[in-house]
Amino acid sequence: MPIMRRDLSIILQLGFGFLLVFAAFNSQGFIEIAVLRSLADQSTGITANSGYYSMSIIYFVFTLCNLIAPPVIARIGPKWSMVFGAGCYTIFLLGFLHLSAWLLYSLSALLGLGAALIWTGNGVYLVRFSREGKMARNSAIMWTMLQTSLVAGAIFLAFVLHTGDLVSSFHFVYTVFAAVCAAGILVLVTLPGSPTDIIYEEDREDLIENEERREVEIPATRQSPPAVVLSFGEEFVRTFALLKTQNMLTLIVVFLFSGIETSFYTGVFTACLSAFKSLSSVHKAIIAYAVLAMGGGQIVGGLWFGLGAKDTSKFGRSGVVLFGMSLHIVAYFLCFLNLPMTAPLGNTGPGEVGYIEPSFIAALITAFMLGLADSAWHTQLYTMLGGIYKDTDSSAAFALFKFFQSLASCAAFYYGSVLLLHWQLLFLVVMAAAGAVCFFTVHNAAAKEENFLRNED
Image (cartoon, rainbow, N blue to C red; front, side, top):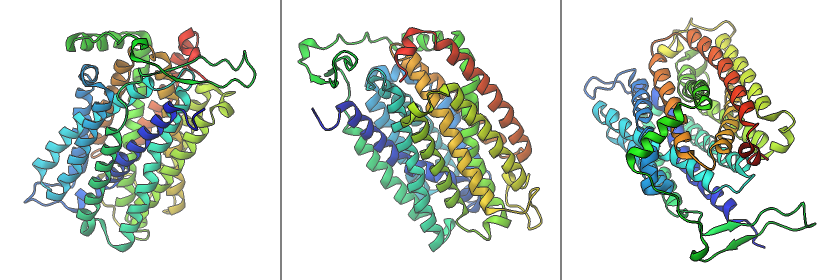
């Protein structure tokens, strides 16, 4: 019996590759708005809002490219889609070494294409390499390893901010980020391309005491026949056909909330902390500490809701999402109390504060809650999508998820630069409640289907 099943080792390798790529990109995402705001210069075309514009372009192109991702993945496979996408992330990070507005916005568009391929490819790869009944476990492993990148990035940022500042160090910071991202590409390149060389015998523990599942290598002549390869147009039509189904139409609200809450905690919230001078002038590394708290929340959530799924099974997936919604609402209320309403628009004056005395501890608690709540939503959403669409349409399902998620993120980063904080928070609360109701609706309907029940732990 091998020490580790091959499918589990592959998921761990996939998670490590994403950990490296997003330790670089997510960390820069938390500081991009603040860095570009500090580097505003008419000669380069960079403005105080260039960070918001860059993020909007990324998610706008990401939105459009999600529609073409399924046929591309059908042609080159999920592995090489992820490799290409990671390459786009590396090129984007290198662009900060020769910063100008036209280069920033052009590479933001390239990154949008890469993001569509890497994320849709990730969803398809995860589904294909998950044995029956292991989708929840594998999603949790992937999610927890991915969010560990926040902790690594936060530690690095804390070191940089304690020894200097972002403006003087950004060349060094982005060089390190690009190198780490390139290492992630190497990890993804060495992944196997297809699971068809391995079959798994059915679990017979209920029939033979102490019998363990076995993993058997089989010759090519016994492999399952390859899936039918559809044309580009057929894949495109197939994606839109899935969009018309009742479950997918209902899930759109969940996808949209996922997009706006992600953009808030990865960009708007940290930008507010940086702009809130009553906090950032006293705690110069506040962004790093906030990212560390978010990462802690994400990891706790991944372990609790995913790897510890049996302990939370009595609450069900709907119960976990209800917990995530409630936690989000509390976190948004803390933001409302602790941060000035003008913080998203730029640096605040010395007299601008929230409804309570500026609190560093409250900011960290809010960050932890945002990370934990986000983990509650996404571990359950990935598992549900993987369960419903495991046998068919996995590529189209994850593409539609990322399409609407990125569409909402694009809009959120745009209005985040012009809308006062309290209006943004109100919209987030309304969408959290609507998203939870829609999740419950689809989950209850899908739970009646034999295919979905078979893929739950």
